[in-house]
Amino acid sequence: MPNPADLFTLKGRVALVTGASGGLGRRAATVLAQAGASVVGVARRAEQLKDWQAETGGATAALAADLSDRSALKDIAVAAAQPFGAPDILVNAAGINTREESDEITAEGWDITMNLNLAAPFFLAQALVPAMRSQGWGRILNFASLQSYRAFPGGLSYGASKGGVAQMTRAMAQSWSGDGITANAIGPGFFRTELTAPVFADPDRAARNAAATCIGRNGEVEDIDGPVLFLCSDAGGYVTGQVLMVDGGFTAK
Image (cartoon, one colour):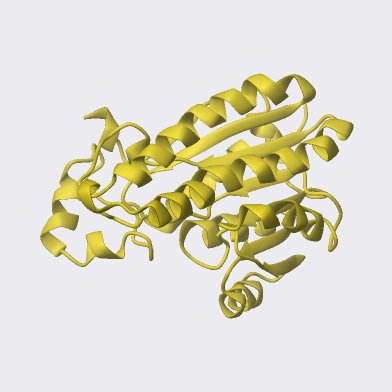
């Protein structure tokens, strides 16, 4: 009988992780590297990417790039294939939340949000799919949100983009899973990261959010380790088109 642990190994795989300089993207990039993948981390902040590499060890490469620039995405995909070969795992963790009230949303802020949160995941995936298809194996993991399903104050543009991510994930699965490429998403609850710093700056609000979960606490970055590894490995080979809410049961209540 095969060792069940072998289902989770990523030895020989190449992963591209966006948003790898901080927060949950950085954690995902680290977990994949520790599971044996060669990992290319992409983000705007070159120094933080170097810190991630030093912290993680293993086969890693850093690519400083602005993912909100849609015209650059094809070049980013090409550059990401240089260190270790064409990625067969794509984790789209980069994101932005401008927290603009609905009456104050600007066209510029809207476009930046949609380009980074929604367009970049799609066009990177589109660029990487041919290589995945050629080997009959690929994993696409998007980052959805509580706001994929719930409306929050100051979250109209962010929520619209993350609602789009949920539907895009299902459409990716319909388009590409017949070629051996799964497409899924993780929907994090409240985790203490740079993106959620305004939330955790208010201790009372953070406590209310924790109380709103079934488990009774907010998320820690290591809480995504198992879901990321499951959905990016052979263990999740028959799971596609799903949004796994990693939120302590927040959306169950």
